[in-house]
Length: 333
Image (cartoon, rainbow, N blue to C red; front, side):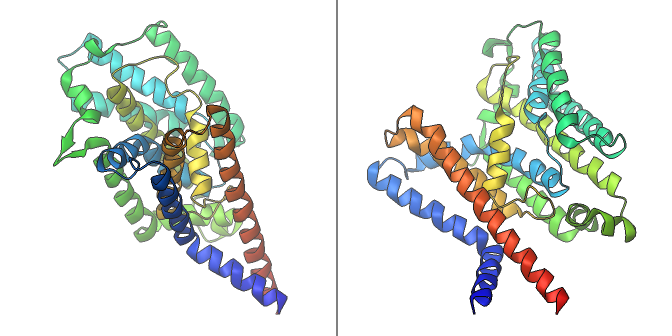
């Protein structure tokens, strides 16, 4: 009887994880609204979604990397380098079309993501080592190309800044871009053979190889997509804040990983859903937005965020352990 209860809980948790996260978000929002009536206003919700957009976009790429049993610690440095390169081009060559600047940022980010994937798949380096090295290379390179100087708001063109600050039908461009990324990611993961092969690579690499999947190619593709989204968000970051600095987005990779963990992505690879990472990023954004609103001391804010993340990790580990045990029992029977 006890084993049946454990198995049913594991099944429920695995299937309805996103629903539970949504309920938690709604409950938290109601509690905060009671404490501060300005929380659920249209203006604050718009600001919340806008502030969470870049984190949400990066979470898509990090999910694919984590699904393949990898990790990318270089994304913030990739953002800084790609964004700084785009900003310097805008400053020195304002006549270049904005769309071309964006494409250069995308290409730059993709290139370094591809190098990460190559080092891990072909070079057999551990993901944490390869991407940690790339993190320092890119951060140092950002200082070199900028010579330690900033690119300020008055040096940006209006069209460049409008990429992040403009709106369509009253909806900020960042929100629209994030929505487009999620729609594409959902289709790619759920309705293409390549998306399924990426998940198979992380779920059981040996079985994937035996079944004819080129796992090295899937790893390179995952890191390249992560690089592409890093380049995109790097350009959007500079456009949004109208300031390019060598230390931009320092440490932001930890926020992205935390959002994925909150969204139920397994650090052991093979599992993760688009809906889950969106809710994880949204919850992380809500925590950042609400704790100051309800007058929580800054000294406690990081501690509370860490506690929520830790609880999410423990829940994921326990649920996955029960699912694994249940599957093993089925095989034995």
